[in-house]
Length: 113
Length: 112
Image (cartoon, rainbow over the protein chains, first blue to last red):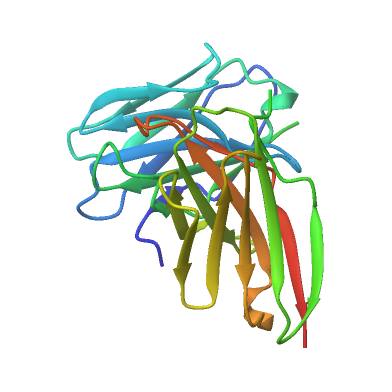
């Protein structure tokens, strides 16, 4: 058990819709990372937050946004969904901003119909 | 643009033998390299890392080798065990640790 909780585990929705993925980091971890894994692809870095502030941005689409709340949980918002957004979305956490993503959640599988 | 590449999607090895997983990268500014292991329906688990000032790092049965001139790293598992069967991802980052780039993974199957 990594200590990172992601909800929901599965999400099925339609094109054009908006969804919110939630991540609770491991206790004591201040840094949260979001990754997208499409079929047979590696993990694509989306965004990192540290203690409520955005620290680094990767290949995150403008239709996507994220935030980290005072209690350190994070949400990834995906809007105007397209078929190509179907993927596994992983959240990871670590203690410091300059750590590697240490603890990963089990992911949220998003399916766009 | 894939900056970290794992060109072997799968690898099959007999229990007790050595498993060698390979990873290539293109960005010479990468300074820190990691390997993760992932079981089905779980998130990746950090396995071992190496910084560019070293060419080898060992942790039990797992050893990572770094060849900076070739922009190549490898993970050796000796001896391989059936429980090592998983997908292995390599990842790399620059000195500021602000972005980690992952390869597409190699699925290792260790046969009993």
